[in-house]
Image (cartoon, rainbow, N blue to C red; front, side, top):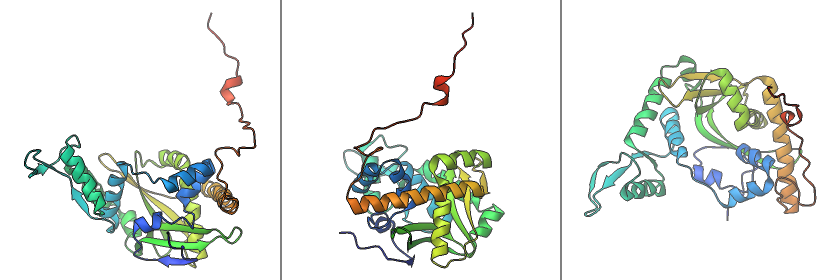
Length: 284
């Protein structure tokens, strides 16, 4: 059984597995899902999913922030003797897949050699970015936090990538770190909810956070880095969504009912897309 979440406070050195397995509090990642469908949120709690892309992201965080599970290079073995014959070039061989699974089971981050070279190059490039390094020069990495939401009584949780003295920082790898492109991606991924969630969580715990900054780095060479603060109106919209998510989590927890996209006693009444009702003109 999962231990009850702390009612309030910062928690240092809490391992990721324990943090993510907590069912008695709501994270902003969970808030995004519960707004889609409470049933989907509950399913994901009961059936956590691993994705290979998580390894590269975890490794980049490890090299940039200096904390996390160890990175281990995946190796391949001779199929007859089982003897290690070198680094794996891909995951085609059963021995490489088995070694990767073994690394994860032992709480490591499995990477192919070429994948490691990429995240190392990313870390090297980021180390030369003046503002990013300034933000990461003071503070603490991977700090978990819990605080009750007064209107709903729901315990919120968060895991700060970097809890600085006055600026909360989150490190993101992305297809593009061009500011406008990232803002568009932020809307798609709900990063505006994350900014509001973490600023409010820090404030409720007495931390004087004045801003939430994303350190965004591209995943392909030359691994460009940009420090981005989302527009205030977008963060305000994120806070509105956070409020709805907290209320929905409270209502579902109290009722024990976790509906799908629409409650099962209601019709769905979607709006027609704007393009569907436009007259089309055909060339003669």
